[in-house]
Length: 162
Image 1 (tube, helix red, strand yellow):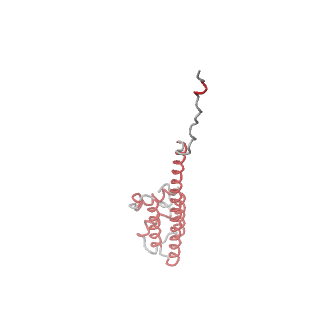
Image 2: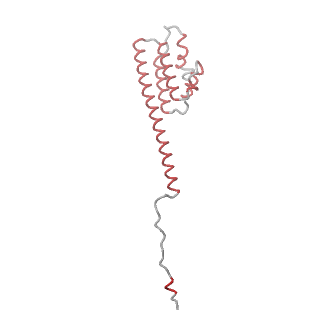
Image 3: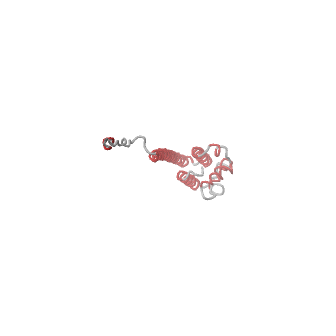
């Protein structure tokens, strides 16, 4: 008689689970980490670019202040400040939104960064009017310089409107 136990074979265990390929959750985690790294890098680059632009704009503003203190030419001050504001605005936003603006439209665009009407109805108005005034006629240069400095600081902190 045949022994039924002799027909049994040893138990074969399956191979050990390999670490490769990872489970789908690990692939998703890797993808999310890569996307987060790219977004963080982009944010830090934009922030650094804005800070560099702000620092150079403030240096230029200091140069304009010194030049005005030496020459006391208000029309030149207004022209230089307008050029500075336009360079900063073009650097921060889409060029086509800013480059063609002149006169009242330019002042309204500058006001859109501030929560007021300092450019269209305040000391900033002379940015477009100073070229047409006699050289002897002066405005409040300190108020204009302070307004431009406040605009630069505001835009450096929040560039969402540009």
